[in-house]
Length: 247
Image 1 (tube, rainbow, N blue to C red):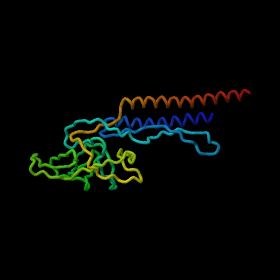
Image 2: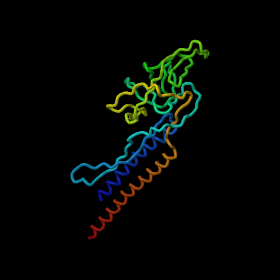
Image 3: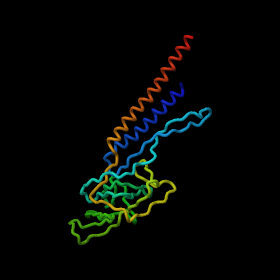
Image 4: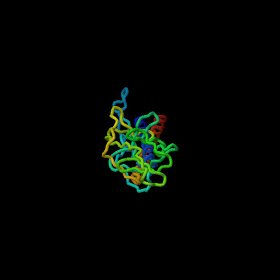
């Protein structure tokens, strides 16, 4: 009986963990540039004395779905979407780099160009800062230009160029903060002049809401099935005890 209970308990636990990952995808169905997590189960042998025939299921998220999300026209000057492959680069608190597709940028109190969660956006020469009160334009090549407050073309100033990179998808991994980083041992990507932006637009999440809802229902049913296995094992154990007590 212990094997039956073990299988049911392990399956129920992993179904709950995978449900949490699926729920995270659903929660980010409207997050700009979000990449859905791919969820899978895999069998892992149990190592130990006399357990060579045992195996347990483990829920894993081996990678992210790198398909592009839909383009959403906003008309906002600081909204940019990467066309095709490529990433924007942001600076981490420790000075390192991370990569994002969320192009809803903003200006900080000192004119710093940042993401909506206040992470500095990097240019080819470091963080980009524009004079406060200036109108900002971003070209398809990532060139950031400021105009006087009255919008006159005369007096336009080039602030810098957004750092746009295009690393291999296999070299990236998602962090707990939702940003992507290069895996250990992979080289940091260099600026790619072929990456282009769509200005006045945002890339939506690539989460398929209908598919996620189906996955949530499937995981709920799987959890119920595993719990029924545990309940059946408990019932069988009780019946066996009754037979032994009356013998």
